[in-house]
Amino acid sequence: GAVVSQHPSWVICKSGTSVKIECRSLDFQATTMFWYRQFPKQSLMLMATSNEGSKATYEQGVEKDKFLINHASLTLSTLTVTSAHPEDSSFYICSAQRPGSGNQPQHFGDGTRLSIL
Amino acid sequence: GQNIDQPTEMTATEGAIVQINCTYQTSGFNGLFWYQQHAGEAPTFLSYNVLDGLEEKGRFSSFLSRSKGYSYLLLKELQMKDSASYLCAVRDSNYQLIWGAGTKLIIKP
Image (tube, rainbow over all chains, first blue to last red; front, side, top):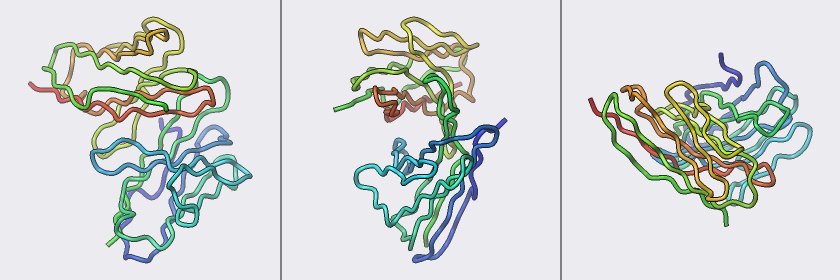
């Protein structure tokens, strides 16, 4: 079964709205979660690494004030797209990795398809 | 810089075998992963290699040669549902996952 849950699956909203996406690890504690963005027919792009109890680490070119990440517990990370505009429309996917040895893969949530009108 | 190369697209016939190659140049190596991603869905984990050699999982096998910076994913007895993108990812010395752009596999009847 799923080990990472992501909600919502779809969001359609007006320009200027802020949208919050939740990512939960279901049966393990994840000190680190990852947020990706994927445009149609393009590869995954890592946006940021979410660290429990501390600030997220953002990739170059990703606006921290635009994409707010909160990792307040060991099983939940949230991504808030603030004042979203049509160019923010994309497929956002989170992932988490079970703690332990380095052979643990990242497990992905089902993704959130965001459409800004 | 860090780089992962895989073919953009491949076509194969139902019931056949296909090999998807991946070459990488990364800062250190702590394992290579293959993921499958169907259109409009999130990636799902397929395989992991950290030592040289072949790992077999049912119809899917993955091979690694660290000295050559090379891996392949072998899919046997292809089914229509195998039509998807296949992503190669390498974990570097900082345990960061570096992603390839993916190979779109098209299966024809």
